[in-house]
Length: 191
Image (cartoon, rainbow, N blue to C red; front, side, top):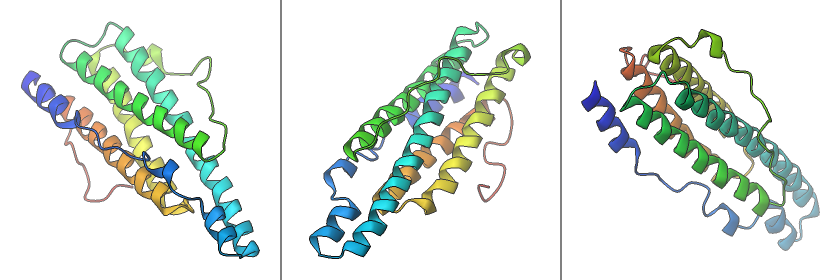
């Protein structure tokens, strides 16, 4: 399993920049106003507000994932190289959160902050497998959340970026499932 974990770390380390160009794009509202279509501008403004809510919801989930991986890392239950994998995945979530917060700011919104305390089932985490299964469950939830959010974005570039994050979360989920001996990709479709 050590070779598998090391291979997994190497496979997910290269990160695709997502949302990086979103701040350089004109908003739908700006495009509509420039074209003299006030009604379309109002509609685009509502879409932008909706996009900001979606981005802040995603940011909140990323901040929770960062905290969850911190709990796992500090639990004393993770052994190397699994601990390294958890820290790597936590770093991915930090990158997601940083870019989501920057995108929210560029779009004129106010980014949510991390909660002072999260409620994690720490009493049920007795060994490394428990921690990995808990993390896999969080990653599966992230996959489902991004899958649900993608069609809701008014700005299709943000939808594409969410798809990129979804791909990363799916890789985390598969690697964690493999690490505990489960079939890494249990179904042909993500639900």
